Amino acid sequence: MATFPLIQPTYGTRKNSTPNVRVTRLGDGYEFRALFGLPQNQDPKIYDLTFNVTEVEADVIEAFLRSRVADQASFTFTPPAEGFSNKGGTFIQSNGAGATGKIVTVSCTNHGVAIGDTISVTANSGGLANGDYVVSAAANQNTFTINSAANAHVTSQTSITFDLSGAGKFVCEQWSKSIPFRNRAVINCSFREVFEP
Image 1 (spheres, helix red, strand yellow):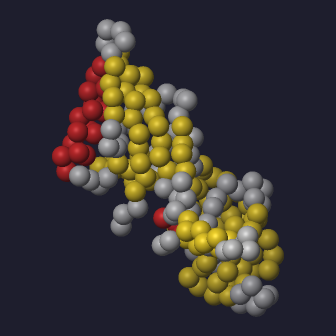
Image 2 (cartoon, rainbow, N blue to C red):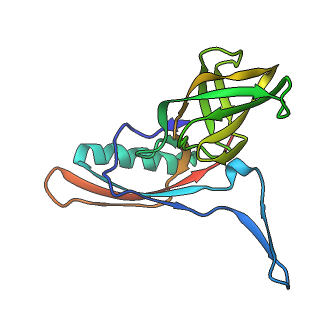
């Protein structure tokens, strides 16, 4: 899979979210909401981006996007100001009822992760293996849950750090280019997030 060139868009980026939720409204005013498919794939983002770049960089961007049209492939892109590194917190691990289990509860003030996010974890001790984990629950802005592959019973708050890359798979179906000055170009485009294996 191709990765978008290391050229950053200018700030003023717009991110649109349209969660894929099915709603059934009943006659008495109640409603039932259900996700349609895997939870981590139900909130695709669309980024409206502007690249105010040199003419050479504009040619690189356009060549990359034209190549993705030709091969009909998605590409990896990290939107500006998405993701984070080395956020710290603590964790405990049990079965949810105080005995040995695989449920890892992480405490971190304003953690910034959502259900379905994949985080890279570094556990300093406590038996939790370092690696990538999917967030299975987010009780509030200060607590979330992941599931370990191994059973353990960690009752004392143990330190943990984690990263969220922010990268995703995208397609660009439309873009425009203007040349306001000599050797300068402005490319406006929309990147739509896609979910592929």
